[in-house]
Length: 166
Image (cartoon, rainbow, N blue to C red; front, side):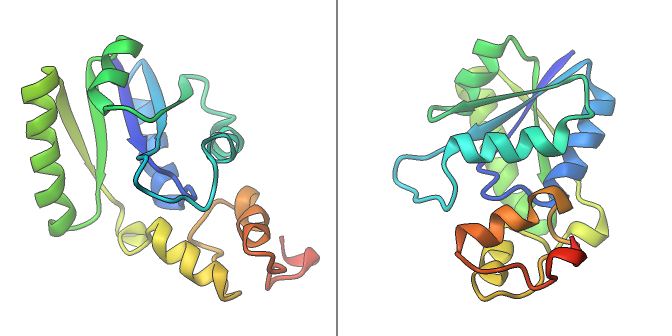
């Protein structure tokens, strides 16, 4: 069975990576889709987000990456997938994701599987990572180590750990 896990991943967090790793263990193939909404501004281009995801998923042989700016159900159909995977951090996420899942089922006939976030990642979001990095605060423990420096570089801020700390 083939699944799609989609998000903006701007930047990818340890929570995202955890969902990717767990979903990759549940499905024969997992397509991680970087989605972009035209009305939204992103810190990283789709190509940069794909590059970061490629770095952190390199060891997952059944994970494939793609990018799109359309509807998720269109990506699912184009990729020949059977299901959408969504990570849920809390009750507010679940309420929103249930609405989206119902819409995806109605407009595209696609089911959604929810994976609950591990407690240690339940308070991490890309927004929090960006806010911390923009002010030079530590983001270790929020994002994979391979991409920390790139995130700080996007804000033209040196890493607070120094070269020996990475």
